[in-house]
Image (tube, rainbow over all chains, first blue to last red; front, top):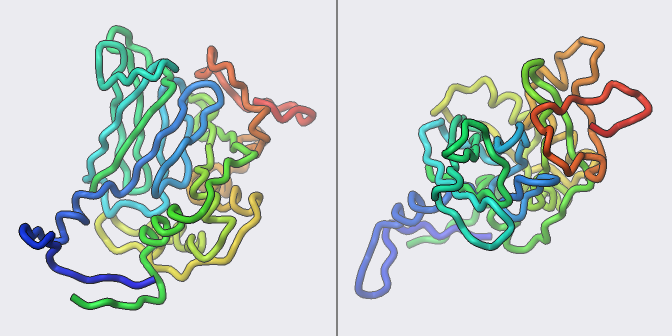
Length: 127
Length: 147
């Protein structure tokens, strides 16, 4: 495998620094089933997830982040209906703990105090 | 622009490359563990892309590098992304590797109590009914391995 080192990327008209691509790419992402027997559907740079308890999951990275100052974007789908629920009135995805080696993501029903298992949890990490 | 040939790619690049051509492997196992008396038993779920990389070899770094990196301060260079990758593992070896990487040594190395706090179990023995998920504890019955 070879590595292309370039300062800028151009389509012939518009040019952007290659750092746009590097810094704007997700450094890890995962999509998993948080109900029944928890299982990962697909991912990048994830070694495992830890089922911590109802509605609480930990995403363990293979290649650790440099520090804990990264960003997690998480969405949930509460039921097996194919309908996505982006932080809507039924569920909220909340990142609660960030560590260089893992990110904890949890789902909570806004109307209740308890965490809530979700059929689909998706999380993307930008660093 | 120049093209640079590298011998040891960064771990992230190796993972991205592996994902593009390896078929994901869903593990037959889960790892049950208890790292706090006040919390329910946790379940470690191996990632299918990671397991495919572990079985293929030449992608993941030695587990020692992760253990040494635990002592490296945040923001400082870590050893594991640039370490020479190791060869292929069996699924059992991969699970042991994952335990050491993703579970606290207080559970798998330093624990000296009598209570069983870690079990590798076939996935079909993990309860699929999560009604009482926050009450799960590892059974201490030697004849049973289910949670």
